[in-house]
Image (cartoon, rainbow, N blue to C red; front, side, top):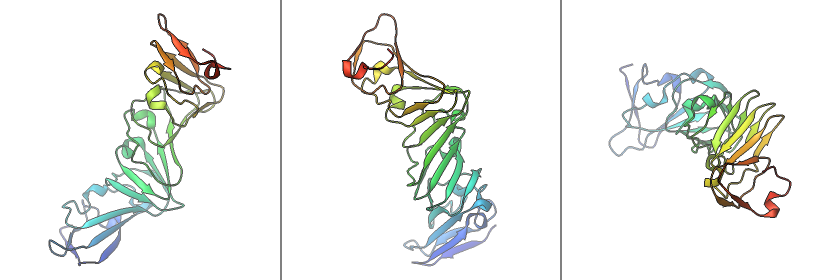
Amino acid sequence: AGMTVTISDGATMTVAANKVDGSTGPTLQKDGSSGTGIVAVRIGDADKAVNMTTISSSGAASTTFTVFENIDDFTGTLAAATSVNSGVTLGISAAKATTKTISGLGNVSISALHSTLAADLTGVTAGGTKTATFGGSATFAGDLGNVSVTVTAGNTMDTTAAKANGKSITAAGDANITITALHSTPSADLSGLAKGSGTITATFGGTNTFTGVLGLASVSVTAGNTMTISAAKAAGKTI
């Protein structure tokens, strides 16, 4: 703490995140106002509690952040953008992942999605698997991006047809998925919704023509409303 490390023009300093933690580590800066020094921060299990936003907080040096080994439960704070190496899995809560850019060729495993119901996961674009666990009963109002969700047994995930459209959501065991406002997204594709012994239900609360894909969803049209649908789309469905 209190030390200043200058990154020479054109040089890259590779360092473990816990060594340059802004709360205890040095101030990092590039050499001169036009310097091109880079700090390449490596994030491993020993670094999982570090607040990455405090590293080079002055913005004086260009900084990259890379997860290089498996982390089961990241408890620190990610920088705005982080890369995950191929073959590596970053385990992180939805609260920690929301609004972050997580790229690279590795995997991202997101926990406790039910506890951060407005989570924006659109920045999770890593090339490996991108999964999230919904471990409670609640209404999701965020954006899943390209993350596949599993609702754990005994729980129910409620969300709108607009939020579920084109997404992969699996209700494990006796878990349930409840879709609302199907009439407001009449082209919704619900074919990515899967279940075990539980239910997938959707409410059509207006008068409209449905042109999407119901998949396994059973639809209830509320009183006073009309759902218009082709015979081909209605075939074999519960409406």
